[in-house]
Image (cartoon, rainbow, N blue to C red; front, side, top):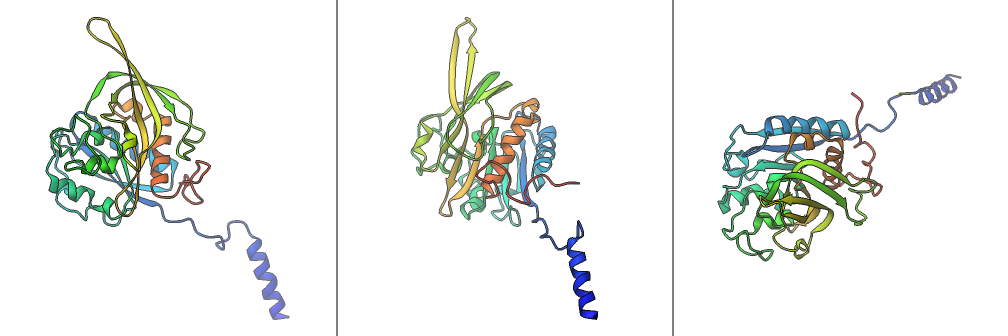
Length: 286
């Protein structure tokens, strides 16, 4: 009789909503966000990114921020190759065009060489350019191309602040599945020094089109890859990058934050083929 009662109690407990027999949600992805350096409002953008990502996915974003606004900002990552220990992914959103010391770049890349996924935003593409002749096409793997090899694209300059029309390619990537083309506010279009396809792991996801007008009134149409993925190093670390993200208005745009969130989840292996977060990695109720 007693055993029957126990069985009935167990059945009733299993039927109760909210009972703690369901699998617990996975731990949030732990993300390190590097911000600081020249030319951008990183004080605002670091929080726009943190709040935007944490609202859209099961992630915790921690800052490595410096108030240094020079082109050679100081980060612990420059001298400590273990700076990303304990993190699931690093977002590089720093602007450090004057950092060209190969040993520093080696330290920065060390976690990614070991397989840690990475995300690169805007001015990260114009940082850590060791080669002095970075404005001419350089072969992947050549001396001084370490950062370009990580990015999967080589860029040397940008145009004026004008709207950019973003058109997603038919890549079939889950990152862009269901996303619509859009036109940004004033943004900087970063050039492609050479055809990005020369990088073996490069996969273009979106192209940017920008029309500029010179002082004589002559209009010029410019085009460049602005969103892409790469696989890097001996461990084939996943890397997502976009050159978009100069202005606060862009970084705060829900379309931009959705794109970056998907890039983060894809790089970390937590994005489904349908473009949605895998179970447990979507937005969490507070």
